[in-house]
Length: 50
Image (cartoon, rainbow, N blue to C red; front, side, top):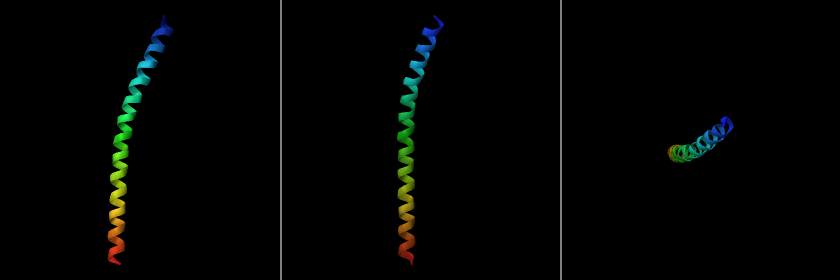
């Protein structure tokens, strides 16, 4: 009986963890894209000044 509970808990946790990670990945991806664009813009400004 204990093993069944552990298995169910593991399945539930992994299922929710995947959903949470998917949302987290999307947020991280958007943040990385924002940082990349900022770096590109600052680089463009630096090259234009010289």
